[in-house]
Length: 272
Image (cartoon, rainbow, N blue to C red; front, side, top):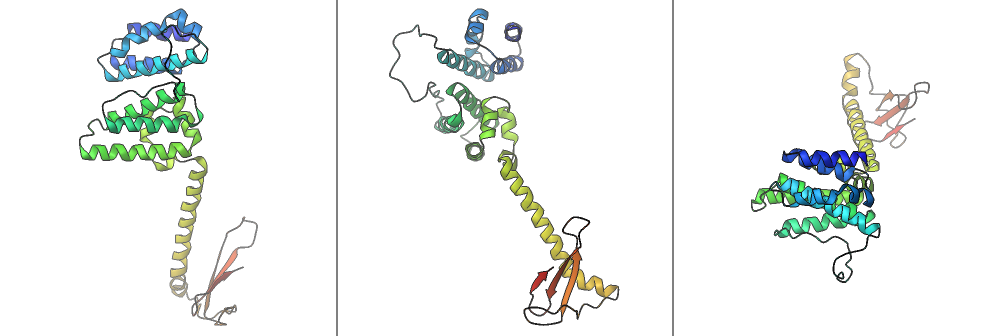
């Protein structure tokens, strides 16, 4: 409770939009219960900021109020208003932004982030991610900005759907929307996919190295007086003796080196 009390006190004294927004984000991460919110009158303090002239502050305040309402609903706090309308699929309604592209983006993000999280977590997180997209590309009437906005949205949606750990980090605010937008395709991928790509890059590097050795081996050998035109290991495919070979350590250091062979006539390769 003391942590929340301190944040609320700081919030009442803050006068810079950036500071206010930071405190609101901190409150979103702070452990709270309905009794704590009631005792400290947190809702009354934050609610006033929903109409703040700074868009970032107003949005963070709206997201926080929604989050707390979701907490109250989950705790079974009775409604004091008139009878509620028929139940909806989700407990949060998508805010009308007056822009079809942004509206569709929020719906898409909300559907993806909500796969394995409650509405109280996924809806505010989705709105925060979309807001970060809007801050980076604020004028969707400009074709280039709209193209980049949509491309980044598609990239995020695709990877969030595939990566449950990434979804969890975004929903819990462990990963901020701003940091999320900075991640490239490799960083957005699952750890298994990252490891798969690392191994593939390593394999391709080794393949290029081996290919270079093969192409230049004869030239290097001849420069120091080694003749590879004939060998004691004939080709098992065409029986030619024009076979070049080299050795490379492919196993642990205490095991014999692997011998690689290539027939100059038919191109057959083998090793042992």
